[in-house]
Length: 195
Image (cartoon, rainbow, N blue to C red; front, side, top):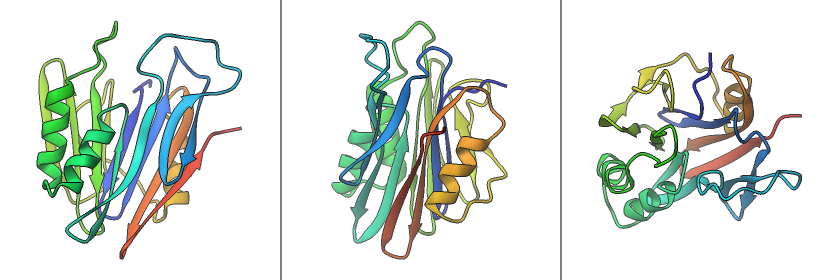
């Protein structure tokens, strides 16, 4: 099954995976603690504005470490709103509402999550809905087929495990994945760029 890009979020653990039929020549790089999706050196040139973006950022809200995950340019305003003290639900809703779904040929939804040590929120904005939910177990939301947050069996317990598990899930066209762990006062990231 092809579900496109997806986020998995639960208290203390999260992951983001790029799955793509159209733009498979991408990778995730760590830019001083911000994970960025971008074209590989051998990728054909494109003017598509949706293939390069920050997909994971660590922030702190009122002393609590948080990680933001998402499939586009909305990751940055979510992180900025958290830095300003917005609650996770409000930061997600405000940024997703403001930027709306992607204006591409598929009206691709924007999806995002905020992961804390003991809490998590998942959200999506589609052509027909804006959904933001507090989640207390691993929850998946994807751009296609699974475009409503739903509980998902995800057993990873570390950032490395989350990146590897997300990349290896049985959804078609895996390109790269990021994992996040939020334990105590620390956010850790991991990258899986495949073979």
